Length: 356
Image 1 (cartoon, helix red, strand yellow):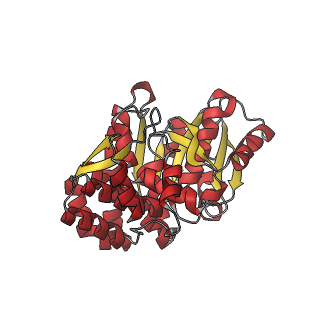
Image 2 (cartoon, rainbow, N blue to C red; image 1 turned 120 degrees about the vertical axis):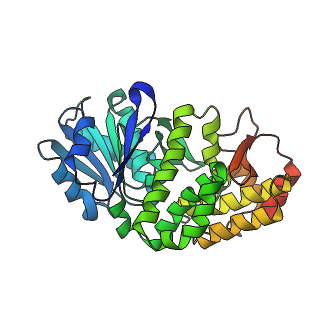
Image 3 (cartoon, rainbow, N blue to C red; image 1 turned 90 degrees about the vertical axis):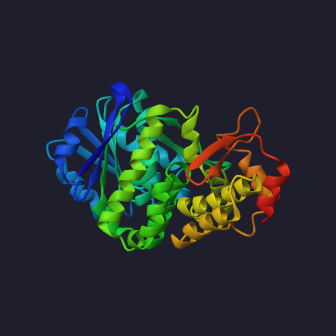
């Protein structure tokens, strides 16, 4: 097991990464508040891992709420079922929520924990690659709105992240590729050496080599933990983690939630952001080709849906959390391994990227 720390002073918390961690009670006990525990999971994950987790919590009053699986269910209506379960079980302010699942479950359970009785403890137990390297770390929680992804939510940190790498053995290949989008993102924005390593090790990652996956998860979490510790509420450098996401969120919303996986949309979105970076003169043609080649090699799309018009893209991108005083800001690459946030965007260049 490897343990990293998200350094947030009194609210610092560990990220445990390793095989066979899900059923280890020692990892949970220091972070459980009271005796009441509500496990939030979904219909896909529950048959696989709910019993193991429940057995690790022997001696606690454990209940569970099982939600439908999919981005299309990340809504206020489905989210409210968590409160129904908490209230039906008469859970108080000293309860703990545990998010057992991928990014959707983690976001919804974390947002519920932020709101229930004005805030209760929660623990992230991510079971997808995307959740283990990205969404479980950093305290972004929320639900979607028909007009935009993750537009309703809160910053609310977990008390611990327990990433059991053996859960990736049951992950569909499409979901594995979607998770690799977020892994690749870290190389593009922060670590050129990691980018080199990813290009060399991508076949091993796709084949689920445990050592390769463990390193990819650890390095991704290291980068995210560093950025979150420096800028918890995204007032500055944390926005760099959204490379490809403004384009990607527009794809997810425009295509209909659930039709494109988040990582698939981010894969295409990173290629679009790289294309715009090249139009700014920051990336060479060879750099741009390298971005597209790595994204495609991970099994991800490099182009958005053909039926999303330029006008619809611009409309959807205008509903983005990085829009400031009506100005769209985008994360672009000054070079591979170095990202920047810019609001000085030539509309003609942006439209050229969208038309392409």
